Length: 624
Image 1 (cartoon, helix red, strand yellow):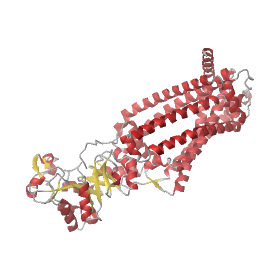
Image 2: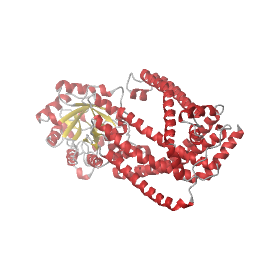
Image 3: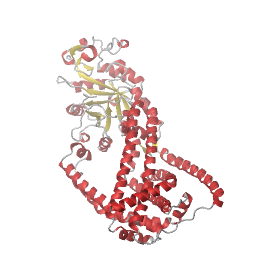
Image 4: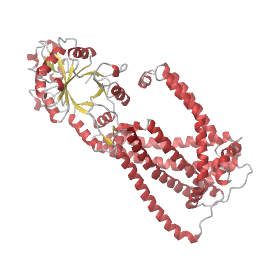
C-alpha cells in the first residue's frame, strides 16, 4: 500500500510538473466552450418554458423559483446532460495531455483536442452509460426519500416543520440523513468501479460497451485505494473552495453593507463581489479539475494496467513546418472564440432581459410620512401625499368624551412630554398640546388631529388605512369610525386594520363589504387562514413562502415598517402587495430604480444578504 501511495503521488507530481501549462489552457478552452454552449441554451430554454407556461410577467424572485417547477427539471436535465458531455470531453483531453507527460512527451493542446474530437462518440457513449446506471442505482434511494417526505412532512405547511421542529421533523431528518449517506456510498462505490473506464477507452482502444466491465475487473482489489484517493481530492477541493469563498465573503461583509444607501451602488458593489468570487472559483476549479485528470491517469498507470498493453501511442507532435500555419490558425481561433463568447453572452442576457418584470405593490405612509414630519399629524399626511404615497396609515382611538382622535400611544409623553392619557382626557384639552415642536421647530403648533380632519384632508387625494387602537378603555370606536367614514362618503377609499381580531369581526359585522386587515408582529399558527382581507405583518414574517400561502388563501400581504432600500426591494421581490414605510419618498424612488433594473440586477440586490446586508427588523417592535 505504501509503495502504491508513493508511486501514485510521485507520478502525479511528475505529470503535473511537465504538463501544467497545457492542462491549464485546455481547461480554460473547455470552460469557454461550456459558456458559449450553455449560456444561450439556458436563456433560450427559459424563454421557451416561460412561453409554454403562459406567463409573460414575473416578479424578480420568481426567476429564482421558476426552475423549481416541472419546466425547471426539464431545463436541469437538458443543461445537465450537455454539461456532463462537455466535462467528459474535457477530462478526455486533459488525460491525453497527462498520458503524454507520462511518456515524457509534451502533447500540444491542438493535438489533444483533435484526438479527443475523434473519440467523441465513444466517450459520450461511456458517459451516458455511467449516468444511466448511476441514476438507476440512486432511484430506490430517491424514492425512499420522497416517501419519507410525504409521510412525515406534508401534514402541515413546511414552514411549520422548519420553525417548530416537531418530533416528525427530527425523525424525517434522521431518515433522510441515512438515505443521503447510503446514496453517497452507492455513488462512491460505482465511481470507484468505473475510475479506469475513460483511460481504457482512450489508451487501450477498449470498446465503449466493454469499458465499464473491464474497469470493474481492473479496480478489483484496489477500490478502497481508488476511493480514498478520490475522497482526498474531493476534501482538498472542498477546503480550497471554502477558503476562497470565505475570503471573498469576508471582504464582501466589510464592503457591501457600506453600499446600501442606493440600489444602484449596491448592485455595482455586489456585482464586483460576484466577479471576485467568480475569479477565485475559476482558479480553484482550474486547479482541481486538472489535478483530478492527473490523479486518474496516475491511478490507472499504477493500479489499473495490471500487466496489460502499454499505452497506445498518441498523436504525433506537430512538425516545425506547420508552425506558421498554426500561428495563423491560433489567431483565427482566438478571434473566433472572442466572437462566440460575446454572442453567447448577448443571447443569454437578451433571453432573460426580454422577460417583463413588474412590481405590483402599493406604498403606505406609516402614520403619515413620519420620517419627515411628526407622526399622525396633518403635516405628516400632507407630506405623504406630496411624496406620492398610495395610502396613509393612521392610528385612531377615543378620547374621554368619545371623539375619535388620530394618535398612536396611550398618552402624549413621546410626542410632547406630557402624561395625559387619551381615554382620560377630553379632546379639547388634548388638542391644546403642541405635538410638533419636539420633532422640529418648523412643526410648532401641530395638534392631535381628529379622524374627521384627516378624512377631509385625504378625500380624493390618497387612500386611508385606519388602524383601530385599543388600550382597554374603548367605548364605541368601530361604530364611530364607520359613521365618520360614511359621513364623508369615503367607503371605497379606506381600509381598516387592527391587532385585535375581535375588532375586525366587529367591523365586518357592521359593514361586511369593507376591506379589513389583521395586524401581526409575531406569527403563531397559520395567519393565512384567518378571516381578513389582508395581513399586515413584520418583515421577519413576510418570507416568500408566507406571501405565497397568503395569496393562495386570497389575502394580500402588507409589510411594515420598511425604511431602507435593500429591505424594500427584498420585500417587493417576495411578492408583497403593500409596503408600509416612514419614508414613502424613498419607497417611490426604489420602485423607479427597480423599474429600470434588469433581472440580473434585481437578483444582485437579493444576493446582498449573503454579504451581511440584513433584510430583517426587530420582531419585538410593538406594531405598525
